[in-house]
Image (tube, rainbow, N blue to C red):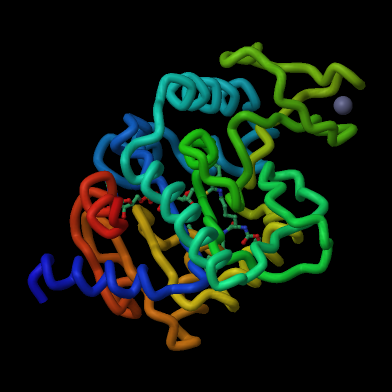
Length: 276
Ligand code: BV8
Ligand code: ZN
């Protein structure tokens, strides 16, 4: 199907959708100058996953791991949201406005759930939001772009956690000391991210699954869809016969279950799907 026909079909599906769930990966931040993992020149080219993104690697050589994350804090600090991030923020607003018109209550976690999206209505009872953005990215660019209902599946590069007392803090210089110490108990600090072999936070897993099970459209952008459980959410939606729209430079394991696959750069394609 010619790409223009696919774009028309994707626009129609997005316009009609009432509850949208989105999954993003490193590809959506590539046009903001942040390295992806698996592409040429990607992070995994000069670092062994098991050395820099596993708890065992951190125990073995915490300095190596902190050099890796300090470098990524510096690149995330100078990066700005691109047109793809900004379009998703606009789409969230449009869907919330659309739902209000249809007097759908915009409901989220009333009590504000720690990952910064307090867009609840204080009713406290849990109903899936009309727009949920699940991201594997730890760079915080979605929130910078204005997205509110963001679920950081793998944590945030801007949060650090004490390996002993568990205190989570954010007020640190961009480049942390090579072996940063906890202000409360002086134990070693680690990045508050989810490493391979570590479970995701249960509340995060709940929200992600609830959104994938409640959505009537699933949008997948810039992910190789290899890492689980993140890669399972578009499959969950497809199993429910929910249309999946994929945007990537290349085909991925999600392509087989996608109603529409748009091959190209997210920053160029996504703005075409959401009218001004
Ligand atoms: C867990 C945080 C319970 C830190 C990350 C089921 C089956 C198989 C394996 C497993 C399974 N369940 C669990 C596992 C094990 C493992 C896993 O999935 N392994 C993989 C390798 C097979 N999962 C886990 O360990 C998870 N924990 O399951 O706990 C458990 C525990 C033990 C055993 C069983 C169960 C935790 C996973 C989280 C790890 N932490 N990040 C950090 O970032 O430093 S993962 C990290 O890598 C990212 O967060 C992301 O998830 C992944 C990279 O993927 P992408 O973001 O997609 O990036 P990538 O470079 O690969 O691709 C970029 C894409 O964009 C490409 O397709 C490219 O074409 C495209 N692109 C590029 N430019 C553009 C573009 N597209 C559009 N526009 C552009 N401009
Ligand atoms: Zn501590």
